[in-house]
Length: 305
Image (cartoon, rainbow, N blue to C red; front, side, top):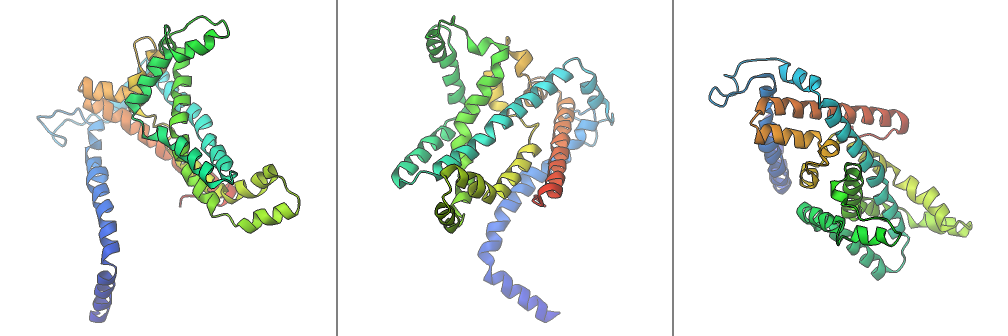
């Protein structure tokens, strides 16, 4: 037994740096991710700050029932799902296509230039992006109306049209993050054996055939893993951008679960109610993640666990 402890001690001392590197993110997750889960129980209590979490009266599923039976439940749920699905349908394949196109560029300097150009929007803050959308959408001097005016279309205030909220959100989101999201696929493509391309060239394969039969199959496992993770966050629509783009006119099309939680929890102080709504959202995400992982494992033998 003593010998085992000595070996363990030697192993720890030998890899002390790795243990410290592991301990820092582990401690961060423990304090800021797992410890706050203790407060989830206020979703089942009528929380009173004076009484505290455990001292507040238990109400069970009252707040969940209140949310499900509310007149705005269907609208908020639909807005959340439709916006997230729309974003995924457009935003998920675009980085893959961008990575495949960048991978086909043979000139190294031009390749780096394209990568840098597509990365830059990722470093813009949400406030800047929404400000740009507001300026471009202005009915008097906005860029969008200048372009549509060339085709004889009357000026429109794009930000005040509920039907245009989702397209504006999604396409600006794709533009901002497509370069950054393509990094993983570019890295995966760089590990593909170049002999496969050389053999295909000898056989007379075109660039498109190489992409279809070599590039895409070689990064398919990466695509599947990232797609599973994307499904797992299907109900998690970014709060900041939606909230900044919202106005009283587009509220019917822009109110999502995250903004609803903020308004009820922070602005109105309905802590138990907003926690219940947030917990419902998290449970749906977890179920989607597990389901997507299960289906992927059965069909493609690729999964997160």
